[in-house]
Length: 314
Length: 314
Image (cartoon, rainbow over all chains, first blue to last red):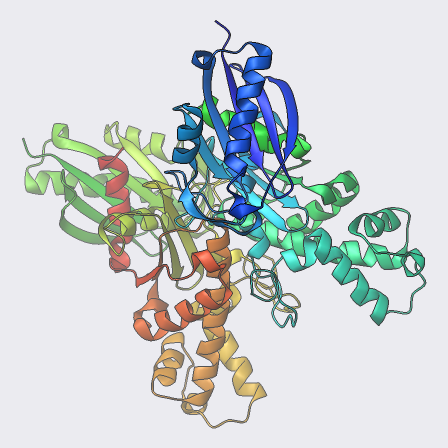
């Protein structure tokens, strides 16, 4: 009998769902909208129904489902408790128990989205040859996940891998979303890059294509830097310095085999990667220099792969 | 039959040796000098002889020795290779194999001194109730070791836990022993505290008891700060701010249950600990605040305990 598993990456706007073979091959992926109304109470029932529909469509019997892996953008304990999730309008409840009841599927596992994405990337993305890995995700925020000995590093309070909230600057006057000042996220997220760029535009009188842009975005800044715009290049240099220094500090703590950069900003590719690596090696302890740097390979699918891996390697 | 193991912590001036029962109780400890002449070639033979003498003295048969754990102040791989050790005048060689040949004891294990000390402290010191732990050792330098799931975090290049070489300041003009600039060790080691204090003495015109001291030492500075000396207190505040910020960044990476402060400087006790904890909580990501802070409990014996643990839990 063919056996299957599902992975579902629950995000603020969409739930990405993947159907996987027993071997971990992605057979099909699709999305449904995340209905956040009524305190997010439709989200898990919608997902349960979607899985039921897919099984019916493909003639998959419940007995042949190995399990379902889930992730969400909030802290999730090993027992499946989700401790609040602002994006979903969720409070504290047991994610895994509720989904078991909705589906009758026993083998349900859940994790935090950034950590699970790292777990997926490590399995089928940039780190397929094994070894330990740090994934840093540069998107609206800066997320992170660490995989050592083929396990996600969770941390005592689920906060391991919160690389975006390492303090990189003393004396910052603006606040990070987390309430602190000087977090890496304030400089290296898409939002941070735009913020930094606006500071440069106000402070310097250098000519720049970004002065004539209707809306400055992280992509604009990176594209302009690639094209040789001096101001944009200075912004990207500063972003990469903060990232390289933070990752060098991460290397002083966990010293992984590999560092992987993901998220929307990482689409700038080797242009970005080489500058981050240069600063990492400048700030890193000697024996930690020269580790492998890669751009994440799975893009937005890292989450569903990680969800599937929780089930297939569990 | 009673069974025993030995732990030997090989340092730059002395080798500390402990004889342990099978249960991990320390039965006896003593030291021999570290003879570094002739490229450190006497060190292991001296230790082998010392263990032989102790067995003879106590009537311990070779069959009743479970094993010998060793540590040294250099990078040691899992297979027992030591990759250079400046303090011992050692190059690269297999530490474990050589000691096996010298003694005929098969079960020999070896590790890096800071990591092994963390392993010992976690076992019989400040963290006996379990959980994960970071140990930061404030001595001539700043060392560190991390224990997660009862295992030492080694790192891909043996550099996990090198907390002393996290960069905490951009724009530092002096150099760390490691060749970088702005490492935590430059501010929070005994040497770093003295350096910082001298900067304050030159820069500020505040009266201070330290102006009349023949030689400024880290202990002087800490004692003066405790007694209310304004200049000394400002130095200690800055040291604790750097330490607290670095440890908050460590918490963003590994988020352990506990943070333990050891080394000579930690003799300042709760006076120091409370200030480090205050700054940790100020700079830490919200869910990482409020973890347990303790002063190391084993002092200089942490190394021999960690060596014994490698054997008894191996």
